[in-house]
Amino acid sequence: MSLFLSNFSADSFELSQLRIQSVNEEEPDIYLASYVSLPDDWDQYLQNYVGVNTRAIALHLP
Image (cartoon, rainbow, N blue to C red):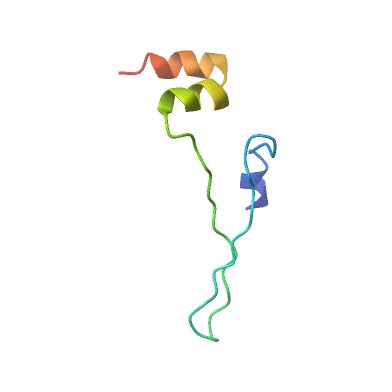
């Protein structure tokens, strides 16, 4: 999980860990739950989170 999260800048994303408690004592608690808060609007996402070259490619997709 840390390898995955290392690709998200702490300046741009809020990173946190969520503990999901198991329903019985036989199974361990689960600590991995990835969540990325994204803008409501696709254009806002492209403008704020995507590089210029990638944005140009994405805008010309069918």
